[in-house]
Length: 388
Image (cartoon, rainbow, N blue to C red):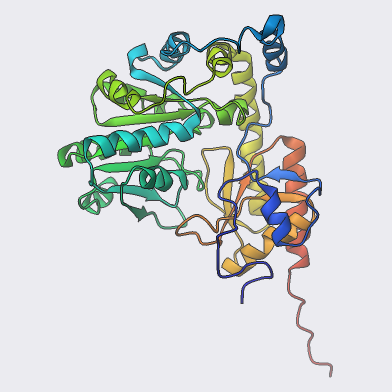
């Protein structure tokens, strides 16, 4: 039997992290309850300290920054991204967050090959299926098996069938696993022979910490490769919506044809160059990852949880006793003021895992303490021996 609050329907489960309201209501808790949010995968160091002053300055003097239309080509932002990524500006399409980049990739595919199905490597982010559905593309999920969720390029391509679009998240959300660059290269070779476009969503690429794993050099040799990026995660800007798409210049031009004019607001577009120029923030982020990611992983394992090795800023974990024991951790943690990400909406995980965001040292200590308390409470009482 499922724990209290876990019904057979999943319609009212929030589709993304950072949405405490539906979960608090589901488990009968006050909507204004203070929470540590370990459900949203955002950099705890951000937004950068200078951002508030930067925004205030641009809203002064008659709000000149918002009183005119943005440059429809976003030339300054695209040039900053191109220099950062080592590509030409013509290979960059600025988008209203990573989500718009996903929908534009699906739109491009639907316009060029209407009716051709798509394949999604799962378990993964729900917006890939939503983007495809919005543009009339049928989808099927090619599921990777736990506990390592390893991708085998040959086996995957053999299972593609008629799919002419393949969507892959790297590092993957919610598993945190990274398909190595060598495996992506092999995947590109095999999909080129089948005429299948490959879209790799790298919203969490800034947390990998290894330049040798960069896929941007592969764009020159593989015109069927699209890379999607987000500035939301590493700079903690979910409210400003900034992302971009990288591909060869012709593909970018065709993808842009499906994008509404002025899709990205002028303030967000002007912010791209100073964000990418802030190397101090990047170094602090690297130091935080180097210290806290292994520490949290070790702490979770010390509590007896199964932890998937992660190259992102979150961990996928489960209770060794299985699905129901893992599910029961969610409301127990919530009652202790800690919000974690359920996996009820991830096909193939079905609530049997939890996703935990990596926070700063204090947040990680609080998360571990709450987990330790909950796990200790759930330990079965030792059986008493017969009195002789």
